[in-house]
Amino acid sequence: MLIPHPSMLVAPQSNDIEVQPVNLDAPLQNHSNIPSEFVWPDDEKPCLQPPALKIPPIDMKAFLSGDPEAVANICAEVSEACKKHGFFLVVNHGVDKKLLEKAHKLIDAFFCMELPEKQRLQRKLGEHCGFANSFIGRFSSKLPWKETLSFHYSNDKSTRTVEDYFLSSMGEDFREFGSVFQEYCEVMSNLSLEITELLGMSLGVSRECFRDFFEDNESVMRLNYYPPCQKPEVALGTGPHCDPTSLTVLHQDQVEGLQVFVDGRWYSVAPKEDAFVVNIGDTFMALTNGIFKSCLHRAIVNNQIVRKSLAFFLCPHKDKVVTPPKELITNENPKKYPDFTWPTLLEFTQLHYRSDVETLDAFSRWLLEKNK
Image (cartoon, rainbow, N blue to C red; front, side):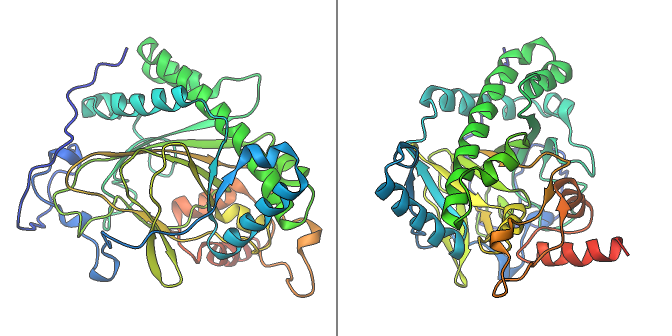
C-alpha cells in the first residue's frame, strides 16, 4: 500500500506578495511566498467570486431509456448548451459511488507522497503523460499552481494499459492503484461512448456515428491536485485554455474552482457529488464542423484547502482521421478544418502552441504549411 506523509490541507497566511523566484522543484504547498513564475498578468488574474454558470443536468438514465419525448428534450438541451459553450452535467450515470470514493482517496495517497517518490513517474518534456509539477520545463511563466498525474488508457479489451503502467513503473506497491484506475478508466470510456450517442442525436446524425468512431479510443486520464496557495488572487490552478482532446468527463471534489468563459465573462461551475461535468474539446469541435463549441475554461485556487479532480479525456485511436460526417457539411456551413489525426493535433499543442480559443485555426494554418 502507498504510505503518504501527512497532507497539508491548511495554508499559512501572509499579507504581502513576494515575487522572487524560488526552487520550483519543491512541493507547492511548502512555498512560503509566491514565486514570480506563478503570478499572472493583471488582465488574467482570477475572479474569486464569479456568478454561477447555468448548465443543464442531463439524465443519462432517461436518455438510455429510449422514451421518445425524454430523448427529444434531452437532445434539445444538449444541443443548446454545446452550441453556446460546450458544457453540461450528466446525472443518473450509473457510476458506482464507491469507485469514485476510492479514486479520490488514491489521489490523496499519491500526491501526499514525498516529491522524489512522485518523480519516479516524472513527465518528460514533449510528452503528455506522467507526473508534472506545474509543467515546469514546458513553460517559464504563468505557471499553474498544481500537480498532475496523467496516464494512457486503451479501450482494447485484450490489454490492461493502466494497471500495467503502474506495475512496471512503480512496482507491486501500486497494484491497487493501477487496478482502481484501470476500472475507473473502463467505466469512463463506457460513459463517454454513451455521451457520444447523445451528441450524435443532438446533431441530427445517427446515434452510432460518433460511438463507432471512438469505440477503440486511446484516451488520457489525469489526476489534478491543487494545493492551497497563499495568494489565490494572483495565481491560477490551471490557466485559461481549451481542451485539445475530444470530450472531457470531469469529477470534482466538493471544493469550487472550475470556471468557464461565456459571453465575455467568467462563470463558476459548482461541484456536485453525484454529477460529472462534460465539455467539448477541440477534436470534437472539428468533428462537428464547428457546430459544437470548445470553450475557454480555467481553475482557480484557494488559501485554505486542497482541491482535487479526476479528468478523463476521450481521444480517438491514433489512426482515425478526424473529419465531420457529410451531413454536417453544407453550403451554409462549409468545411472549416482540414482532416487530421489526433496525434498530429497533440504534437502541435505540446510543442508549438499553448491551447486557447484559436487553437484549431492556428493548427489548421500550421498543418497546411507543414503539408506544402
